[in-house]
Length: 141
Ligand SMILES: [Zn+2]
Ligand SMILES: [Zn+2]
Ligand SMILES: [Zn+2]
Image 1 (cartoon, helix red, strand yellow):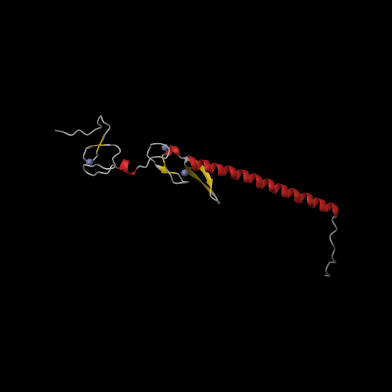
Image 2 (cartoon, rainbow, N blue to C red):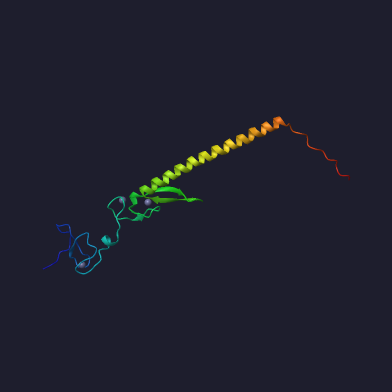
């Protein structure tokens, strides 16, 4: 009698060590104890059933390569390209949009202040015209 390893009709997979048919969900072979590494260590992607190959750099959630998006994020000083899950990508994009809005507000405030300083200086000049520079006698040679 010969044991023929190979996929059976019931969808079982043979144990790589002893060829005993195993359920694909089994974490180890009950016959020889061989660990079914694919099932035991692979964490599924947060968005699909594919095994995770990477992690979100925002929250650390496991993900496949397709379900992470690259985004440039700022960390106070300087920034970096990070792979983010959909949630972290959305929040990073929202904070990016906020920083743009805040930047526009800051520029506007600076322009208004500069305009105000310029006009008030002009006004002061009109009220009190420039006095000639005081002249000092030259020191004797
Ligand atoms: Zn086995
Ligand atoms: Zn995925
Ligand atoms: Zn995340």
